[in-house]
Length: 191
Image (cartoon, rainbow, N blue to C red):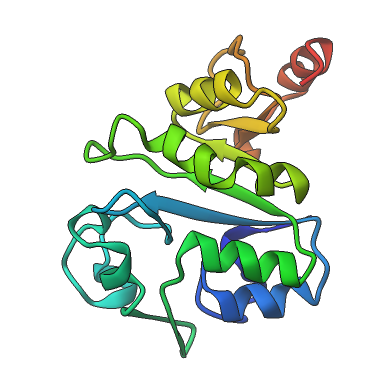
């Protein structure tokens, strides 16, 4: 069982620590959450690349530093919380013994070293905590597998058009496009 964006049944604001803490009490196998790189090449937990929907600020995540972003409040489901740094979110997950499925979001503003920076900061903790990663970006997954082959990584496929041959450990796919043939192919390749 995976809690998408760290919430269950609107029990908080997606991708925030208070929602994670409530959701972890339900003991999902994983809490799926999203990270973006900040202007100062740090990592913040938020799904959208633009802050308008949840924070009411019409700026991109890459326009602000981590310090600026973590001062912003996001609101949803009649609740509010601060945007967390990935470091703080990871610490909260560790405190609650909650495994994470970390989605690396990408944009044209990402630094060329984004994946290397993330792994340098977090790969030891990710491995020790048995956390997983996934991304819609195949170059991200390729870099993760090259730099840290032990880290379980999944390639997100929005549609089931053809079976991709990748270095990923698994595939994350929209259920409505998943077929038995795709699952058979994946199992044949130990995915």
